[in-house]
Image (cartoon, rainbow, N blue to C red; front, side, top):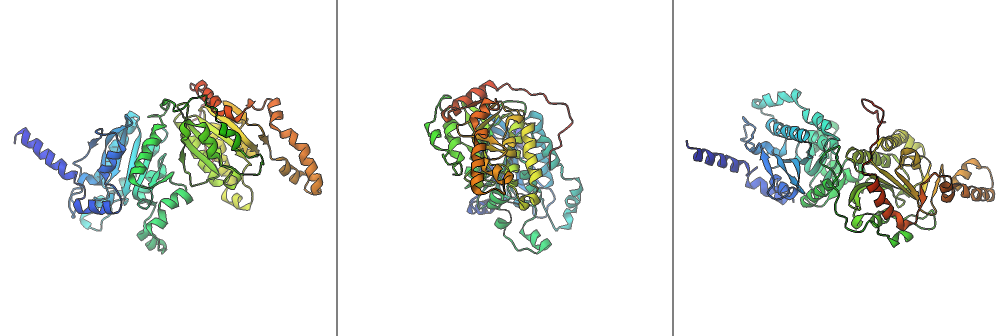
Length: 511
């Protein structure tokens, strides 16, 4: 056979593989409002940059025929002109299940991503491990004892390169751990789900009748469990979120995130900042308005916006610099820190610290939640996670006290003891073990109300921010309009920050 004929045969085989599960299954995928595995890559990657590996892979010996690309489309491409490895699971082929050859392909991608130090992206639309009741396929079933490498290898990659698991369909059993170990997990409303066991397994094991959506749909994981980071309305929106998320990150640990041309002047003084925080210290306000007034273009890419809403975490830019923002939100439970808020903040701080993204803390915190309920939930160990994360972080850390910094809440929001590169406060702020009224309520609990009121008035001058500044415990009290210019200055000043810690094999974080 001549080389031309051999190449024709190669192209025929490639074309067959690219038909995926066939027209009927592709039509069903479309009816569900889902893109196919290859169309998703077209949206995620820069046009014309995808280079596939393993297109000819298939699960040989299956009684029901070939499995094109063995249910997962793998390769490399460019996201905003920067390289990435991508595995796109194909639900039209055996439900996107993990087969032996498909996993071999993904393993090659993980190897490549780790060796070249480039991001790894999974587009998950998978029923989990490939199952069969056919005794002829017992060889694959019995090889289970040699599986599980994918999760260990993903852990090795963690903190080395960005890891993204976009849930564009189901992620059942084994494939649920891919997002569980990833840095960023967006989900598509109505078509994606995650669960250790699907509805049939749940019914057979615990007798519970539950739908896939109720068990592990996007609402469950973005509002209740906190496993996912963002709910999106479509595949296209989900993939756009992945592209934006990666834009804030470097390709690998040890490098700085790319600085973008600022969309507005570093010295912009925002008049609106004078009117956001109410005069009444008990009145709530939306901290998102403060963030929007300070960051470039008013744009915050929020992480976990619907989970633990009493704290806001997200990515933004200030004078073109990527910055991770942690802000108490008085609109939700007064901004108090509870179990979920502490976990959310700790995870986000660790993420930013791993990839050299500076941290901005916007404090208005009454402290940690108290009571028997939160003690039973383990508020001490959860709060310790946040404290541990902030104490370990060595990236530039900037703190602005907007209104109050009370108790251990002040500590974990990067108070003075936690090596802030800048610690400033707005007029009217208070930094104290607690507010004057709370202090009197405890220390003088048997006194009449009138006496308590007088005692509180006597304490208030001692926690006034000007006294704190006079003692040198904050760097300055600033006009709120100075916030953005000052932050922009310090982000440039601290861009080369390096911190040496005592040698240790590893830290032992609270559980």
